[in-house]
Length: 334
Image 1 (tube, rainbow, N blue to C red):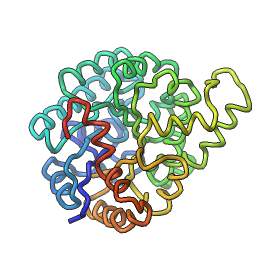
Image 2 (tube, helix red, strand yellow; image 1 turned 30 degrees about the vertical axis):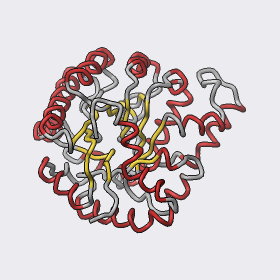
Image 3 (cartoon, rainbow, N blue to C red; image 1 turned 90 degrees about the vertical axis):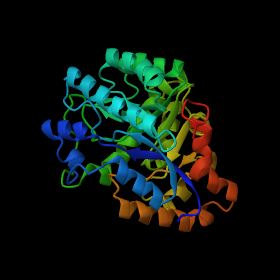
């Protein structure tokens, strides 16, 4: 067994009804992947035991719950079904499962109703949003009322990458032969985070804790470029607070980043140029990352932890202590 107990802040659930509605509405091969993976609570618990995960924070992955562009009624129904399912699972196994409730941001009215329901009735630990909703990214002004309410509630918001889209909602996949998780997900993560900064959402909503997957994707080498450009070239619509020093301060106070995927050792070493170990979380990405690969990544994780983090305390921060800091003060007691 892996020596460090881990809290998994990036893992997914696929209730039976969600799998069916995805297939019905054109998502049998989500984001160019071969299929919707199989999932059950029992299989999830088996994976957790295999790599010494004590608790999983569950979320819906891409394509999210807004499955048909413009069909708000379906988005509400799917979101409610998934959120209710996760709430029930957490009630049954509160020591092993927490969850992030899904918010389809294109439905502003519905989201403003779902936020209190998820927090106050379902006992959600936070919320999950896709990096874009048919070409509208997280800093879009249309979403301001949602983020203002999330800020008021001091919410945790986990963003998950999805297929990048143009503003008209059409997929922007210039290399369609490759599944989008291979590299487009990493670019869309960077695009979403930069958009949050440049739009002013980060500075306007200091009480939101943002969770970013895959060690921030393609963001790290772009941090100085986008923030330096914003500071040097004053343009309408770009937050005047953005500069390299301020962005790095925000990344180290308002954001956390999980280790799902090929994080060790090179990607993690590079990212530590921008953030401290206080901002890192463990992520398995199960079941889109199948159990044998989760075990492989866990072994890599354990093998390189001491090399990347010589300090024992830093190793424990990534594995569980940072997650305890985030969720210990919420309704979920890890």
